[in-house]
Length: 393
Image (spheres, rainbow, N blue to C red):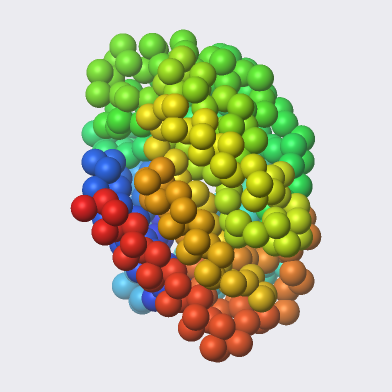
């Protein structure tokens, strides 16, 4: 049985600005000597997870497709008997059209999908082709592929020797309730045996850093495992340098020194978003601007590379505030992650969806922004990308 794990080319997804951001991030990673795959910034973790759960099927393979619905691509898909994919709002139309086309051309296979889209969009996919099934969790594969499901640990065998930054998960969920976020509230720690098995799965890969996929690193108590996990990874990968985390202003202020010197954390992303208290309050962010000097003072005692996550496209946003933040802390910022404010179907309280375009994190247009405001936002994002790259030269 021929099984394909399908991924659309991330470098061509969305509007022109999103594609520029993708190319910008590749240049930034090159400046920092962080090697990543050509057409997406990381190996899709879902493929490793599913391949392991299915016991590394003999006839399974990875297939990457250009972002689009060209006839040649659709015809090529018919060579597989089972297609598996992860659906986002940014690639929903590709999967919908592919499902309709395959269903209308007598393809006898099955399409097994999961991902992060609304119930309404799931229903559209199921209606498009009777061979489409939806898995709300990866464990649902046990129902659709019972003869193959083994429940094994993640496997990166299909990506042997790829340069990447693999993701490791110590916990699931988050205690915070940021308005634009869809992560379930509450934290569940993963078992040591599962974490160790995932670390072992990285052996075929080439990497310098491991990204901690915990949504707010430091909330789960098992972050102290990193000291031992560092030694485990270092033993089979001498090039390994340490961990890359996503956390909060408060956590980094409290733990920066200990994390850096004792737990080998080298890069920290923090949700700065819009450094203005009015927006931080409306976003329900767990910090206020007055906390920033303390965080940067703590960072100055370490060699941590600091990466702010920044949001653009909020109604009434003054981009000068973000520019002032970047200017004030320029010497302590490694690079920036840039995001357009997006209203997901199950977010915890972001602006209501007035247009389906509001769901697409890879598009610039938002129903609450005028064309002039969209143009101003795009110009601001481009100027920050230029600033970051000049810093890195």
